[in-house]
Amino acid sequence: EAQVTQNPRYLITVTGKKLTVTCSQNMNHEYMSWYRQDPGLGLRQIYYSMNVEVTDKGDVPEGYKVSRKEKRNFPLILESPSPNQTSLYFCASSTGLTDEQFFGPGTRLTVL
Amino acid sequence: QKEVEQDPGPLSVPEGAIVSLNCTYSNSAFQYFMWYRQYSRKGPELLMYTYSSGNKEDGRFTAQVDKSSKYISLFIRDSQPSDSATYLCAMSDSGGSNYKLTFGKGTLLTVNP
Image (tube, rainbow over all chains, first blue to last red; front, side, top):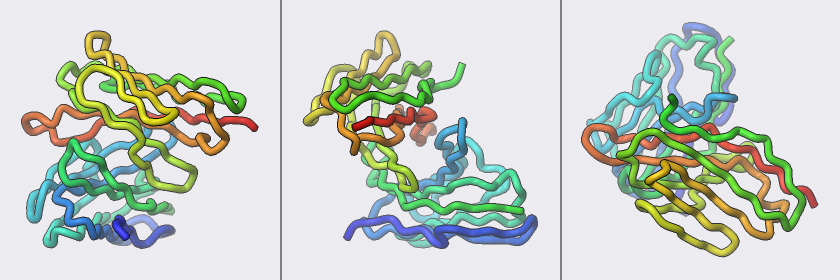
């Protein structure tokens, strides 16, 4: 089944404790992206990647890191999480930017 | 002015009603227009995709793009309770270094049986 998977689905952590949210797709897509979704602010892009080893900042990259060492994986790293990073995070992938983006199920992160 | 404006609602309609959802935008370079549907506790899923101006119909759903007015719409005919979801407009120009999809904030729709 073609899908985007994210892990963990739910995470509660404390300020400053490094964490990684994994994202994997099995559709051989080149384009991958991370979004955060907050009430009243909608979906905002954090980082995107157009291919292996090619990443760039989206609208709200501060406090996040990404890497794209393999085509299928695009982890999101929070080196020192803060409470304002409490949010619902989505990973998405597509063949290209203007093609349908397939979203993962989301990761609900709470930073205390 | 934000790049994409979308009335967040919420919008509540009776079953069978015609629903109109809208977005306005400011970036005249946008060429690709999409509507995503997001059910509660799920990721968004593509519903409609339109390139440039015009109409596109798929079953009970019709997407319209008016580039001259920088205005896009999604119409849902004979709305069903299963249409209850958040609807997000999204758009892109895919040009230059701006490789991103810009989303509206989403409109929460409830269709009451």
